[in-house]
Amino acid sequence: MHLTATKPDAGAPAVRRLARLHAALVTPYDAEENVSEVCLSRLVGFVRRQGIEGMYVGGSTGEGLVQSADERLAAFETVAEAAEGAALIGHVGAIGTREARALAKGCAALGYDAVSAIPPIYFPHRKDAVIGYYEDILDAAAGTPLIIYNIPAMSGVSFTLDDLARLLALPGVIGIKQTSIDMYQMEQLRRTFPDALLLNGYDEMLLAGLVSGANGGVGSTYNVMGSRYVELLARLGAGDVTGAAAIQSECNAVIDELVAVGVFPGLKYLLARMGVIETPVCRRPLATLTAATRGRLDAIAERLSGDAALASE
Ligand code: MN9
Image (cartoon, rainbow, N blue to C red; front, side):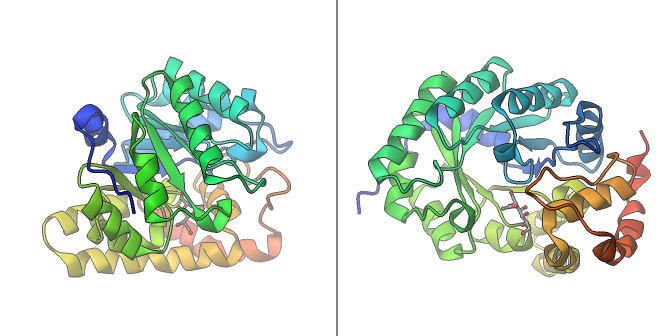
């Protein structure tokens, strides 16, 4: 192993600002699958009223990978305009470096707090090529910090602790969005990199992630259960682990239902039912909820709407 000691604190202010909860925003569309900027802006306000002060734009949940570069840039802009001081992370990962660089430039120009990127997908690249891809993104981001998006289950790329150490050693890399069920690796990362930003990626394991060393999280279900996750953090901060675990269980009962029908279409269905977005459409080939499965979520929508006097503007 070539574990590198923690870097001096070049990224410290960014880490402090980003060590919080970030909603992985869905991208609302109209019935023809065109991006609805109006609904996206409304969603940002809805999320903020739940107490979530960070936005992660164009990631898995945002369906960035089925959008054109121009659409992704437009979404970055829409969110920046609606953000009113929220912390902003733009997901710029792409199959090709050129696109990722253009997106990183766009985020930097819009004043994003950080960019983030999955590794390049589909082609099985050598690790050096993957590192080169991240160096190229850093170069385009021109001083905007980078958060590695580690999501082995979907990217097909498994980073060892040593790989992650190499990435964290790149100047400008301030942390990792760790979407992995491997809590041992989370703990190892925290122990090896005490000052890094470690954002927990699976909402159903937020408490486990925080206890293992994450100093924040990025989550799709924060779109609809933001206030519950804020409360979970508050309980944990107050030393009430049992209370935090109870909230996690409550959230997980909803996540179980979402996983059963498909998380992204399910979330969009809930948001449409709550009056935040117009239609629950996902962009093909991502599925939209069928009428047969919608009923499963109606009771949940009803219950969450209780929190959502929120939904009214
Ligand atoms: O970014 C999301 N990751 C993926 C975070 O969708 C791959 C999570 O919030 C999950 O949607 C969530 C449900 O499994 O934990």
